[in-house]
Length: 485
Image (tube, rainbow, N blue to C red):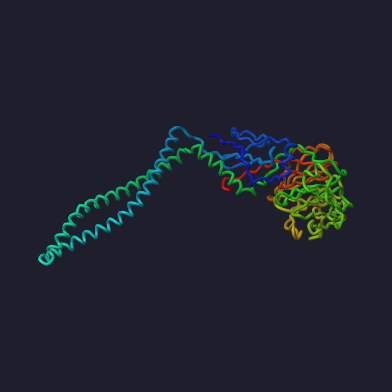
């Protein structure tokens, strides 16, 4: 049978990375299709991405997307080629026969246990009877006259027991037969199992079990499935229209379950007030918010909220500050050595966007440029507690030529502009330290993007587009080898 394309429609609750607001509000606006169970011929492209499955005979291939119209995680699996679907009447009969033999084996095991226990008692009784008979003979020879009367009575009882000896012999023979029968059935079971494996005679019940187990396999590979290569970006969903032409907004990808607060920062400099909305619904429908005053004004629109703190670039400096919302204090601050600032190496749209902080599945990142790298983009992985640089990568892409950028699964994606027609055209992978030019359509609905960040929990891009707060759904592709499952 050709490689089956299984679109798993099971609700993988453990893989749901969509917040409650996404499941209630966003899907109906995005208009995603619901999950279906289909089977298509191998070699057909996945219609959500237009990517042909690669080497399907060796690997599981997973297309994943943020959510369907009911807020469920969508995962399309291309399974490796197997013969499990080959079956006919003979294979079904073979399975039924194997089940009967297995049932017989269980019964025989019970019988064997009982037989062995009774046989031990009978053998012990046999020894005692034969010993008693020998003693009687001795008594008869040595004490014929003294105990003749008593002996006759005992001998009569012995004669009654004597017929039991052949019965015991026959019982022992039957026990050996049971043991032999047990061994033969075990051999038959082994032969049938080998034959079934050779014929690939897996029935529908077994196939259903295998498909159900796929959920557990995917849960074990959750971290791998969470990551992949960007293959598509959906049309934008406008959540709200507010603020000036420039700004940033976000949710916390590391927030506890049920925490869907929205953080809102209008402008790119000379402002230090952050708005907190209780939920996405509140952000969309009301103007009720709590205001947090930062100790310093921020620079650019590259702020990010992560695990209860906001990370931002202090205005007119290359200092990164971690501010804890709960305590309203600075937890940590550190200079990002050699990083350009104060519109030295900004994105193409300007706006003091020299240092862009981001969060993906791997943690906290800083994207900036240095004189040492000739104004080209530098990517640094940061320790979220100490703000120390864990590792840095230098790219060949000029920072000022980038419209905006975002990180997904350790790969930096760069747009070719910020106004008019826009696309994602450059990708640098920190996993392999390599880059490539790509072509992923990106609809710039309101013609001026001043902020674009990925949220790994929502599997969505947050954008500030000319005074509009916008969301984009993303589609990722990842090939998982069979050994990983």
